[in-house]
Image (cartoon, rainbow, N blue to C red):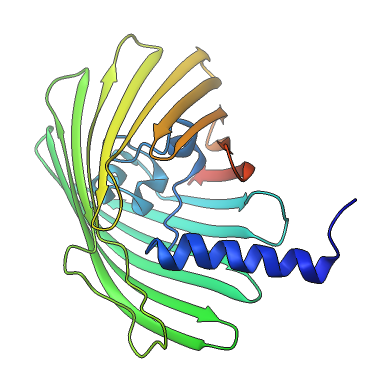
Length: 274
């Protein structure tokens, strides 16, 4: 027998506050390609790198627009919507990213402008300026700014090394009645092209207020149009899976995250290269 809708919303609201406020976690949710590979964002190149290591957008070869929708855990109201636009201009790359996460009683907005540049064929560096807005019923709303920085280095044709910082300046939300930080996290990782069809990825992440997390992932291209993906992360232990489809200029990526306590979270992304 299910819970009444008002009670269900109260439980969801309390869970969001527990995971997002007390664990200092404004949601920065990666796109389904990186999510399906264990939330690996340090050294994977993708349009959604704008939400992770911004240096990764330098792999985008033509203007690309992407839309993302994710549904979280056991209630359709708890969701994330995101959009990304990447525009390459020779060795310079401009990006816009926007995401909204939450429910009516609690939601976060993060919008950012990114700039990345290639230095030769090996090194890419990116920086992103972010605007954050947080609204909680009965507490009001507040806003703040932060900066993310990242770099990727192609050691050879098979191995990519990457690292990025979220909010290294330790920015916080202003004028809140409860103490809420903007997460400061450091990520370092690598991607290895094992064969022309198999990509392995790993990322080590550390936040000021949480334990070290390790993510492992794999992408297997079973045919030119279809890739199967899987991954896991350790703190907390979660496993992930997904499928990617590429048809001419259109890319469709899907992913599902399994949390041992909160259940399954699916997401889908559509990207079109102009």
